Length: 141
Image 1 (cartoon, rainbow, N blue to C red):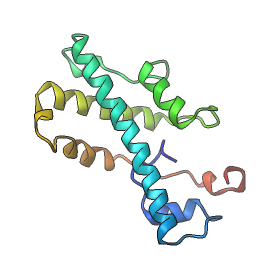
Image 2 (tube, rainbow, N blue to C red):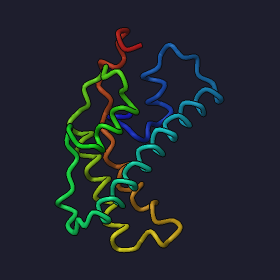
Image 3 (spheres, rainbow, N blue to C red):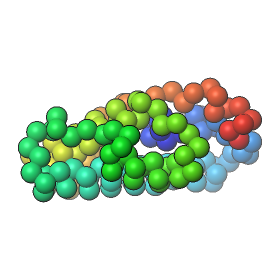
Image 4 (cartoon, rainbow, N blue to C red):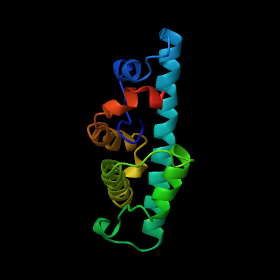
């Protein structure tokens, strides 16, 4: 699911986990899991953006996220260890946009502000995609 939506609402979670008997505690736990997924994602983006600056990359356009990139491998190993799912192209696009946002913010020293990441989060949350209906089928449960 994370490949499609980084910020799922509780309604989306309920739709795609029909076998779960939801209550406030379980809903909070699932939302917390996605928060942890996002935290790992953003940590990786910041790490790779900072490394690009150290490596002397001076143009954000020189940074790409492809299926053979180290960043993709790190994300895929974390979210898709067994390679059970095909990572959608849109996730690759969103990852590249996220990397560019981090690079731009860091290279312009916006990271000196304690809340510098909030602007990035606002951009990325708007890039969520619909989760495919096939995830509701019993083969995914």
